[in-house]
Amino acid sequence: MLDRFERTINYLRISVTDRCNLRCRYCMPGEGVRLIGHDDILTYDEITAFTRVAAGAGINKVRITGGEPLVRKGVTSLVGMIAAIEGITDLSMTTNGILLPGYAGQLAAAGLMRVNISLDTLDPGKFRYVTRGGDINSVLRGIEAAQKAGLRPVKINCVIKSTPDEEDARAVAEYCMREGLEVRFIRQMDLASGTFSVVHGGSGGHCARCNRLRLTPEGMLRPCLFSDSEYSVRELGAEEALRRAVQDKPEHGTVNHKNGFYNIGG
Image (cartoon, rainbow, N blue to C red; front, side):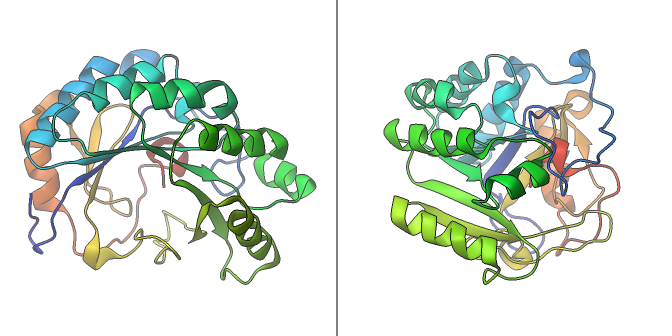
């Protein structure tokens, strides 16, 4: 699929839940959020049916996100359903890693190819502060489990304030080099103000090369993370939602007042 600016759209990010087992300060407000009702969230059959149509239109890369995708019951079955779709050649997941020790082998067996794991610091105290109570050792065990399961490459997403030269970012980079991991530095973003930048070590934030669409847990297809435009796959049907989202994809991001990172992913 080509948008108005001749960009090839071949990447679909699917947020399967707005729930998470951490409360990262840059992602979720301290008072919590109003969660989407169970009946409003797309079923795995609905997600798979949409993805099959998207694959027929040219999508070949899919990433499962959240919230934290591993907190949704039966998510390994969704991985298997998407992995079986003809035309999907790259199937990955973004996770905080907390639950990976128990899921990595199942995910690999179901057809997941690789994972991105969030890790902003190696300092246990700072990690507890940033995540409002998280245990960094669980994440490190998750990284090890992903490697043992053959989910490669394992990529580390490290959120920074401004530069990869920050103390915590340097420590994460050194850890990744020792452990054979790839690292991506993501400058802290703000949807409401439109603050974002190109990802160091990745392709995110580069509007001129953006190739992605985003599906929210309740079935809204969004052409851009930093835009309020969205199209309901339930109301419009998969084909029409895809057509409108691609046609409406902006040249560059502006602001997003309808969503948060907790329910649309990064």
